[in-house]
Image (cartoon, rainbow, N blue to C red; front, side, top):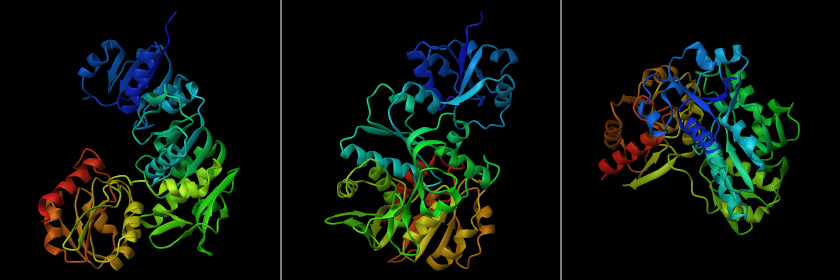
Length: 437
């Protein structure tokens, strides 16, 4: 009788966590990675027999003893192995599904085009200060399988559309969508498919939460609660109701003697999302605001890294789509020098034109998609091409004046020039510190 095995699809962080989990629990497995040039020494590092690993290609018989495949989110569903697994009726699951088999800890699931990592980190901060032991994991870079042995009161799962696309088990105590904007059309056929994939997070939740801006598109979701800013009354909404004790101005969210400084309307919405979750968990709102007031924003998100000669230098390298750059432009005052561009992805940049005309004095294009963005924008401001990040900073130094803001907000992925957005932001920060004297 053939001994059945699990198949790990992909050798990234997700695959690595599956390998460690299977080895620890004496579960037999094989590995397939789509990249032909993946490091061969990886086999030695995990003491894996070479015949159990395939890179890029495989023979048909390789799948004969597979009972189930665990897929990494980066693998495209158009890959041949996905079709082969389907034709053999081999179930494809995610590490999230595997995690839920072994954990009965209540889960709070979070997705959205933008803001999800910020929201889960805010939530983790608040719950831990509220005497709940919890951790944020998933798309933020912490594999859920790596935290199985710890005892938590809540698990906060950050989920991308790539993960939701393949997931089977959507069980959550609370599920939250921060926003849904145009993105990832290199993976999803159109906005309708992308939207439907995001909505899957609500398939098996005790409570469903979304921004009030999405309410009309979510009328088929049971037990739906909304949060955000009511356009008519300009009042703040938490879980579908207005709390008159919760107030805000252009910079602060406050209640009684406690206040939170927020960075732009998008972050005010992020705080309201977290307050809605804490309200469902019966955490006193005064205590919640008190705890959130000590939250430190994550790096590379409209991060003021230097103020010199009354010129502000902002690192918003996490911006990988036009809606996040829109949020940054809305947050910062006029006289902006905007550094924009990166690796190309199917994206509509036309919505930035009005904000750029109203607030930006100079555009510095960088990256492989500079012409792609330029052709979509209808702007009257001067534009300059930069060859590198250091070149962009030199140009910014040349044209900036007191009261200006220099904003790196690429509205693009980073893979044309950098490993990831963190490296891009680090290079920007070093260039500013080296050149702005």
